[in-house]
Amino acid sequence: MTRLLYDLAAADPDLRFSPFCWRTKLALAHKNLSYETIPWRFTEKEAIGFSGQDKVPVLVDGGKVVSDSQKIAAYLEAAYPNEPPLYGDPPAQALTGYIKAWTEKALHPVLMRILAPDIHAKLDARDQAYFRRSREARLGCTLEELAATRGQSVAILQSTLAPLPALLGEQEFIAGEMPNYADHIVFGALQWARLTSSTPLFPADSLITSWMEAVLRTYGL
Image (cartoon, rainbow, N blue to C red; front, side, top):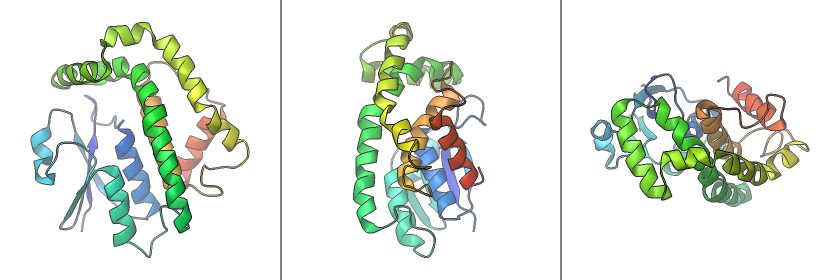
């Protein structure tokens, strides 16, 4: 049986930048589950119509179709209980909820203001039109206005990220000695930035970069 994961791609099919898809890829690796990815682009809604919605990630596991990274994580926990748990002990799942909320409510918004112009430049023409229209409506400004205020957004990002290197100075992973879904969530956001930003947002010798490389090494990615 081949598991399939529909994974957001840029014009270059090898550039896979979705923070939510990265969460799922790390979760699958954590569970020691093999899979193949199918590159998918913003305007290819019909390709995942079978999932009953229009966003990735979409996981096809045998006869089971699951969309949304959080629902996929819950599915993997239930379907593969003999593989390493994504959250550790039960109380850790509740704490991971805070990590998810911080990432999606604080980290993602400032990253989007930095990355949107850079992402737009990496998409094919059809996706560029969709991305500009949808993101400008969501953010209430043009991509050009975002580019003009990039320096301010980068400063906000550094402040938002401050707790992360403070933690990583004390332990190797967010979850402690080994990564788990809390690491996957934050890694997805910062991998999104690392793959799409026109300039580095954290130095190569930073604790954040070292942690990201350690996560990839742990899962052989």
